[in-house]
Length: 457
Image (cartoon, rainbow, N blue to C red):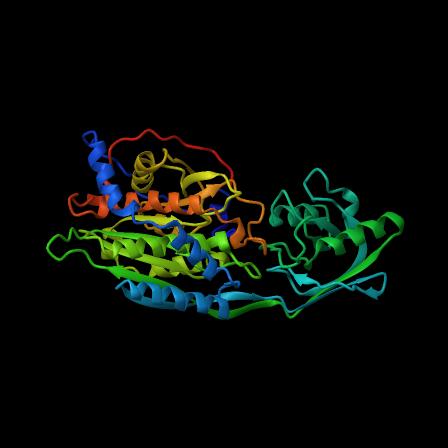
């Protein structure tokens, strides 16, 4: 799941655009027994071991967009879709990747012994100034005395944007941030537009050594960032399409997605090999299940770079296709044993066809799923085109989010299976041949009471 705020306003919980208002018909009460019977055509075929094995395979190496690891994953996903009998497209696109150039630190005139990582977005330049430790750099912690100094900051609790902005507001001229306890790498950190100071990251142990040194003596540091900037790289979307039965085609389309890329250095077992496995599982099952609806299963590249792949995919859709897409289901981080309960997020915090279907399916499969408000994943571009869309995710997130510790041993087979069952039952509610077309997303499933949950991610 993308942590960077692109679009920045959506990541902050604000909305850049608004979908057309959706009004739902008042359908007759559902036949509960019949619904269960239809659900069973899908959910009884979902296999927890198969889901887990795919996560295992995908998380054996990092899959950062533009790397060989991502390309290997793309080829695997494509071959799986094709083995199920789908018409499969590999959709390349170019995105701007960050090249951190060369960064370094010196302390009291001596080169720093530990590795240094350039913040994504850092400006180039070199600054030499006294070093001051400002803790977690909350607005309350940062003192006025940091003016004209390099701020030494501990990672955690608040965003990179807030930490850097808080020290800039007090006049800091550079940033050295060290990782939080229990996470030893230094591959982290973002600066944003207007945060024009050199910013670098070091690991936890190296940061503590500087904190200890400051307790016994004054420290002058130099932070240098050279040749950092953006470069063009290629990532891919994988799109698998299954046409409906030719004599029962309603003309509608349903899309189901996940993102296959991971953060740099992260195996991404939960983020988002879990979602990819769910997409592949449903694709395999639906390939043998008659439908009256065109189904498109897809995995997106460069989600972690700012939802680049999903924005690209949606930009290639014709007006006719956009009008025909009744719903988009996004699965992101659906398998962590250490995360909270399942929730459905929409960018505007409003119910839509997807959340109605998801809540109804949840009530039949496991329990009613609540909804909330969040962007930050690949449901956003669909929403901005007026397509009912929602993100299926567990929240709050696990402690290993976006870290090298996002590994297979922390995946819950039960969570993987349950979320895939709920999404599968919801998708099949639209796609099964005995249902009419959902004209302009105006026909809701049987009514289920579900509430807004102001739950943090």
